[in-house]
Image (tube, rainbow, N blue to C red):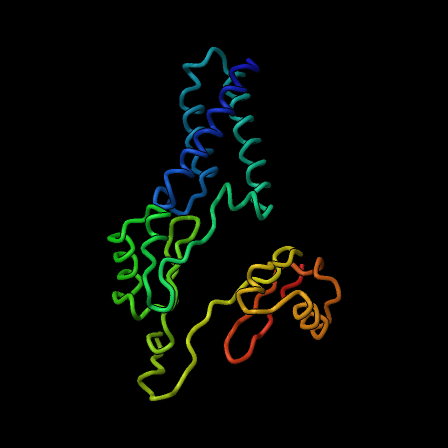
Length: 221
């Protein structure tokens, strides 16, 4: 029986990797391991009558649940999360489309345009950022003058919308995002100390909202 359970776990992992390779368009609010777990649990549960005995079916279900929980825990690790779930990918930035990112993610332009229309932004040039999320959804941040409250109609000069950048995630400094705003860890440490934080490991999440001023927002563990 152990051999059969081992084969089941290997096939499950292969299935998760296959779904991951299919691209984000294959997902709909589900991570690859979520989808794989649901598929295999249903297969085992409804196929129990074809197994040699009932205990084999129960053991198989237990193995899939344990593997799924392990993968879920691994997604808490930054590098593993990118491998298992994937990372967000910018498709539009400052009104400019990135065809190479569409090709990389195998996300059809027709589907992108459809998602933008559903979000209420049919014109690419009116979008500050459009991001393909790991679950296959499109997040849209419009340019300031095209936001629901149209500042442009009021003849008020306004700054462009900027994405808040994560600079600390679960106690770990995000060096790449600090470089994006041309800051370093010394700057971050000083900003944190001004807010009363002396140890970055005690911070659950921190972001920087960029613009004329870089504003740091901190969330405790």
